[in-house]
Image (cartoon, rainbow, N blue to C red; front, side, top):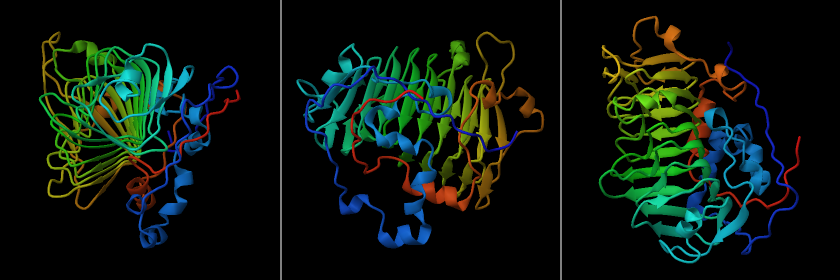
Length: 381
């Protein structure tokens, strides 16, 4: 099968006009430090590359984001059918806070009236059918992180996560039994545990266009070999930039993971790790080693309902290994044990792993200084 797939655009009908803004639409004005230096943009052509990103059209209208993820999280609609809600304070809790909005049970599309840092004193639990949309502002979460617990249809877009402190404190913790989740264009760094952890039968999740930096244990999928129910987990990770983070890009137990068009550089231990029964399909990614040269690692563990211990499986297709990187793939035969993404979704956008892709991921991953789109009805096509 070739490396280029068409991308089907999905639209949802909001049932007529959407609720008016509860506060004036934010209009983010980029600060000078938020923009790439002019000479860099001119030399790399980065300013012309945004149009080649998948689903670039989703910023044309606020709720166009819903249902536009690629991969396993493609059905996530977030708060598409709910009221538009505006966060009006950077306080950890109380009226107008993000926490207050996220605890409400009804569907809700959450935007921000102001930019700044929200210091979380405890995990912020996100209930089902929520979109936390950071477009139009610059919102940073620190102290603790988001917890997606037994929820479904959550979209988190264009936020920064930095400086989470305490045992088992992750930037975004997805467990247990959560599904239809999309994390898009977030910057994550410097947490005491993981940046994104997906465990305990959470599935149908897409992580896209995120920037990971200044961290050790970056992304864990499947927490323990005793959790055999994690065999149901399915995760897509695409167009992400793992920027000098030490390990777990990701580390996987049991789950099926599709990696494509990511750029991983300068890891400290390994890039990607396959442990007990995992299936990792690595497609058209760029692996650029620093001091540690081997990209793929296998760890053997024993499932509690099996007699023999086993590692996972990795298939590499179209990946590029540069700066002396060694793939580290196991002997032939792994391909027979690996799922193919087309078994689960018919289309996705993937391009060859080139210098152009690397430049694009440098510039267009993580938090972006984009304006908040206008809220308007979405036509059915």
